[in-house]
Length: 615
Image (tube, rainbow, N blue to C red):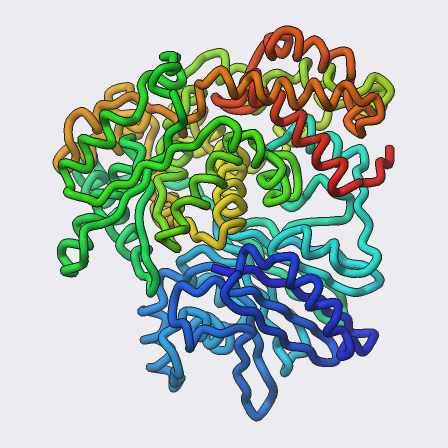
């Protein structure tokens, strides 16, 4: 796992741009604390920061392969999980290898397959390859966008980076917040529309897309999408196929030359990952698997049962560890840390995010990184298997908007009235919502429920899941730590996408089919446990702390947040401990304290990034 930066221009000689590429690269040092490298010629400059996971000596980047007809150079962030199969194919076609790194396999796969290489990859990846023979740059991103890749074009120069901050280190790239950016920040945020960012003229390569940049400009293509087709397997066949896909996805992702662990909450998803990983370690004669969980100071005293968080994790974590004989570590985060790392979490994302839901993961990874470099996590199972309440609740299904973000009127009211008169959040949200739904393929054979759930699944996979994947990548990589997400294996997603809802929600349960498939190898209490989301703090001192932080901001009438937001409404939010904003800001967890923390992050972002506001 790593970070990379670069720029390319076919009208000017950029070979004397070492200082610029070094400055861009330095901004990503957190993503790659172990090594750095550069490649510069007349038309392209590439920089790489490396987090060593596979083949310390053989995986150095930028990696160059020289042939009689020109050079091929790669900078790459990610992990290719079918490296072994690709390598065998390449060897059969006359390629030799100097390392066991997936970087060399990826580069030579591009040399062999050309632009079609993306159709042969199973993994999480973002990469750029300079093709000297064709005089063009090839950029690509994985199927679900687990790994990030941003770009802009300025004066015929393509500028790109793993994080937006890298692009801003290129001379004269402006930070502008326009009407669309405000809509993204306050109408969609902390999610975002694929391909866009909150900054004007700063874009991302969309998931499952590649781009070619040459003297003719930039050309972007989609190479993969979920396709609707009839599911012909019965329950027994479906269960068997699911178990195979789960085992294959998880075991492929256990390859590492550095210490590896799993995150274990005692929920169904992380327990499945941990079970397969622990069995793999035992079969390979490896030491017991290390597992990690997160908790908060005094959470046991302050936990309040709710529809979204029906029970705490500790009992179930102990049950799994006793069952699998793993080596468990419990990381306990204190309230002051959560609040003090809100700014770091914002910087990691380059925008306001999920408040302490972000900063807690950042701190969790920071602590795990002391002993580990890679972890597998159960992220994305809820999106793929239908685990969220909005798959079942009538009010959410009939909301005619993104069901995790239904407080549209409150979001509009939060804007400064002058800006609110020019920025119509609901119109923008409706446009993005309907635009997204228009992509859904409904089959004539789909039942009414399956058709309805295809729509909600499409929205969840392409919006909510993307937000959580962004969170996982940025918070982990800010600490030079790699998170892998086996449930995001595109083959698993392809298969589950077409399973009829009646089977997917077996016995009327969220993730009913997944529970059924795992009933023979997980404890019954884990299989039947009601979904409980990522744990957040219930300590009242956190509310007091973020309330104090936001109050201090509002005491300063020159605080930049006042140029964007409705000061009176923020004061109402403060005076009611967040209850003036009657519904969650986002998802299940971002309630009053998290909204206040989000507003603190907005002010931090305006101060740190200083975008020019254009309406």
